[in-house]
Image 1 (tube, rainbow, N blue to C red):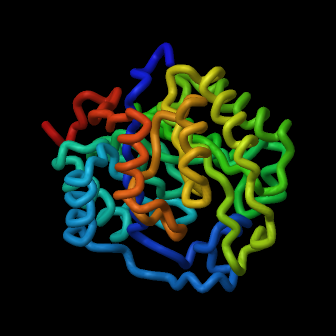
Image 2 (tube, rainbow, N blue to C red):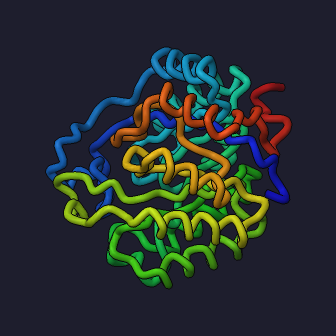
Length: 297
């Protein structure tokens, strides 16, 4: 790859710090309170609980720690958001990149997260603007874009990608990339997720994505967004070692590392370690365009 070391892969750990009970109707998500998915609503984890997992992730080689909460969006001034800000401050002191995904944001909330030490915010487009209403009706595609604008106005790096395998067309996938390319600056990282059809959700009967469709999308993303990390994300547990190798050789240079994502399984870390060794790949060192998180001052 022209703009990235060809043998480096960013290792990211994703933790659900507030699981279930979400009011949204995202058709792919087992955390929606609208579906009988078996996922129970849980309390927000404590800072000590999160820190212990973050330390383990860092010791295992992860350089980015991503935290997700099943919220429609952030409400400034609430106890839950204040607790998240405290968690961010603690995790940022570990010397890891800190990413959060908390739903919709205002400019004020985005700035508070930036001040606490957030270096990246994940807010996926999910799919094209045209197909989006078939997947989510409780907020609009424009709502997504407004949160992305707030993230970028606050100077936080944008982590933004999508999901394939939801019944969209190839044109929808390309249209999603067209929107991503139009962001200024472009996303710092682009997660490419394959749908994990969760029981009880409207998309539970969707067939798995053909691996060559995934490889083609990764290769296309690498071409049109050469300066962005391309992250091999949900669905990797269903890929063979050979399929994952194709994804890396097509341009993926980031992956979720650890045996669980928000609610879906992920390959075991020991298996990932062996895969990286066999492919001659090494973990990327922590890096962020935000060189001076204010919480470190």
